[in-house]
Image (cartoon, rainbow, N blue to C red):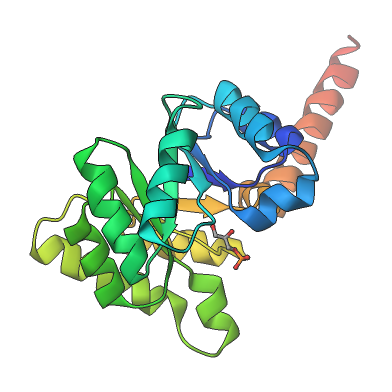
Amino acid sequence: MKIFIDSANLEEIKQASSLGLLDGVTTNPTLLSREGKDPIAQLKEICSIVEGPVSAEVVAQDSEGMVKEARQLAKLADNIVIKIPVTNEGLRATKILSQEGIKTNLTLCFSPLQALLSAKAGANFISPFVGRLDDISTEGMSLVSDIKLIYDNYNIKTEIIVASVRHPIHVLEAARLGAHIATCPFKVILQFLKHPLTDIGIERFLSDWKKLKDTLGR
Ligand code: G3P
């Protein structure tokens, strides 16, 4: 499974990238607004750090505006993917962009049928938001499971990005279900790397090694 970082923060992206595990980045208007910088310059910089796909979201609500924005964003770098909300207008825009060879990531997906239609429109990626569904007492991972089943039934190549990830168990479940990608906040990447028994184990090995050295007098 590929791991993306869900962030527009350069420091976090650089750190995750230096771990050698980063396959891509997803951003959205909220994440870019948190950085308080020119979003275009920020996206360019992100694309220069990461080789994999970098999702940049359109803010227009009509298909014409989305396509216009997408064409501009696509010029920023070869690895830009255009994030588009799953709406009627979004699907129209996706169809046009897919015919132009511009990659898309359909976002704010909350139902399996939205995912099916996104794939039919030519989406390269689909982003089910699991955390936001969990927030309203609906099982987010069931959505991923349904999308996976439907995509497998029809041999659909659209890649599933498990998004709105809140904790490591979301990542574990995404991997169990065979989702292609989990996009995680940096905090979650650090959480799932860490295990207290690994730390305790290292401490014990080092202290036993020191004991041996002391015994041998070196
Ligand atoms: O990738 C989508 C993600 O940024 C949404 O996460 O935590 O705002 O639901 P969240």
